[in-house]
Length: 166
Image (tube, rainbow, N blue to C red; front, side):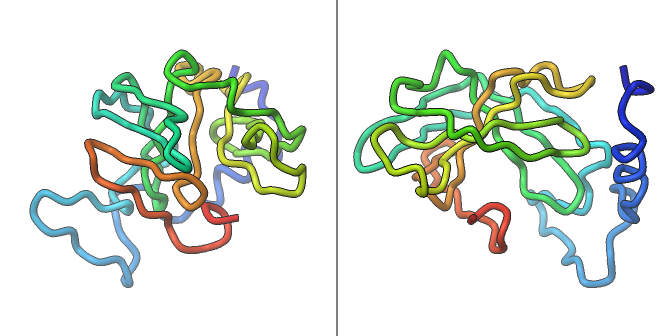
C-alpha cells in the first residue's frame, strides 16, 4: 500500500516542481503530432502499448513484442517495458546489482550471458514494483545505448546523460 512506503520515498516524491501541467522556461514547445516529456505527469502514467518493439545486438534478436507498457514520467523519455515471454531470457544473466526508483521500486539489472561482470547491464526488471506499477512485474526495459532498440522499425536513440547511458 502507498501509505506503507518509507518516509524517504514520500519525501523524494514530493520534491518534484514540475508535474505535467506547466513546463520550465527552457522546455521547447512540441510541434504538431509530437509529445513533450514536460506534459507527462508525476506520478508517472503506465500506458499499455501495441507498437512493435524489437531489441537486437550483433544481429541476434533479444526481444520482439507488440504487448508493451510505456511509462510516461515528467522530464523523462518514455521507457518501454517488454513482457518476459517476449524476451529471450536465455541470453541474459542477473548481475546482482539493483537501485531504487521512488515511483516503481527496486529494479534488478541484467547483462548478456558470457560477458565479464564489469560489462554494463543491457536491461532492468522490477520483480516487485510499488503499488500502481504491478502491471510491469517481471517486464524488461533495455538500454538503447547498449543494444539496438526499434519501435515500429524506427531506431530508438538514447537520452544523453549518465542514467540511460551508464
